[in-house]
Image 1: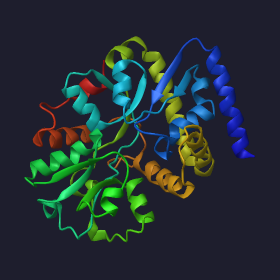
Image 2: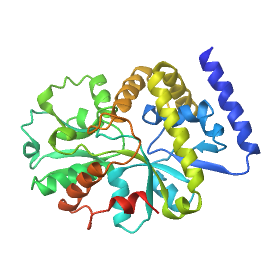
Image 3: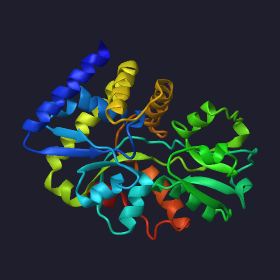
Length: 314
C-alpha cells in the first residue's frame, strides 16, 4: 500500500511540473541511491512544492557528470564533494556552497594485506574513483611521499575482487558493503579510514553558480529549507525513506538491493553529523574547509587555498 501511495505521489508531482512556470533541476553526484535520500523525500512528500518550487531530480551519467551539467546550465543545483568544488574554484569556476549535507568523510582504503599506515601502500597499485573524491587520498599520498600507482575505476569493485590491484578506495556506505557481499572477509587491519588519519573532510554539499546565487537568493533559501526538511524527515522515518529510495531507483531503471540501500541510508545519515559539534547544521564548517585546503594544497591538487567567504558568499 505504501509503495502505491508513493507511486501516486510521484505521478501527481509530474502533473504539477507541467503546469509550473519554472522548473528547477537538481542533479546528485551519482545515479539513484540512498546517498541522496533527503532530496528524494523532499520531492516525494511535496516539501519543495510547499516552498513554491517545482524541482525535478535528474541524475548524472558517466558522460555527463553533475559538474558538466552545472557548467552547461542543464542543472541549477548540484551535489558535489567538497574537494571537487575546491578543485573547480581553483581552476576559475565560481561556485557557492549553499548547503553542506555530509559533515564527515565516508572514504576508506581497503587492502588485500594488513596495513600499518599509508606507507604500507608505497609502490602498490590502488584503485581510485574517476571522480574528484579521489583527490584527497592522492594529495595525502603525495604529501607523505608515498609512491602509489593509482588505477581509475568508475563504480565497481571488480578490480579489487579479481586481485588486479593491491588495494582500493571505497566509501563506507557503498563499495565497502559491495566487497563484503562479494565474499571478502575484511579484517580491521586491512582498512584505513580517511577520518582516522587526519582527513575527516566534509563530502556531499549542494552548489550553485555564483551568478545563479546572486539572482535567485530567495529561491535558493527555499530549496535549502525543503532539502533540510527532507533529510530531517529521513532521520525520523528511515523505513518510509527506504521505500521512497527504492521507488526512485526503480524509476531511474536502477536495480537495487534493499539491504544494501538500508546499509547506505544508515551510514549516510551518520555522516550528516558534525564531528566537532555533534549536530546537524547543514552548513559548511570552516574547520573542515581549512583541513581540505591544507591537504589539497600540500599535495599539489590546488594552487591556492579557497577562503570560506569565497565558497559561501556571493
